[in-house]
Image (tube, rainbow, N blue to C red; front, side):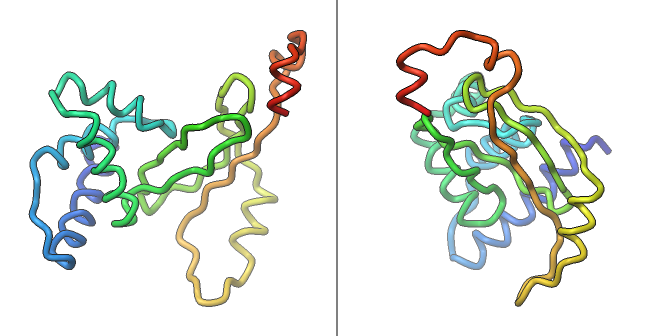
Amino acid sequence: MSKIFKIFGGALERLNAYLALHNMRFSAVRETVLEQACTLTQPFTAEQLIHVCEKEHVSSATVYNALKLFVDANIMHIIDQQKGRKTAEYEVLTGEQTRMQIKCEKCGRVANFHDQAIDRIIRGRKYANLELRHYSLFVYGVCKKCKLKKETPKDKILS
């Protein structure tokens, strides 16, 4: 079974449980949006998901409504907006995903990393009223490539 199919299957199960709990109807279009979101391996914006869903003939309003529903159903989460950016990013919660990433605030480049010391600290800590399952850690800064570029007056305003 492919990893994407496994992620989609788990997300679809959680969606169906949420819909039943809240007396909401199942929608094939929502399922299509969820399936397309599960194919995206990095955090994505609503606009990126809209672009992916265009070939499935799904409207942008439907994508926005589905994203809100998926966040409410704890299938996805919103990654905090970054300084200087107006659009939030979304990520599908797989339930087994522990992610450490660095992200450039200027160009948006993302790179994965793993630090065993940080992992031990997070997993070794006791959390009141919470059993840790997984976590995401995002470290923001300016990459070497952007640091070498000459800063414009617009960049100074955003920082």
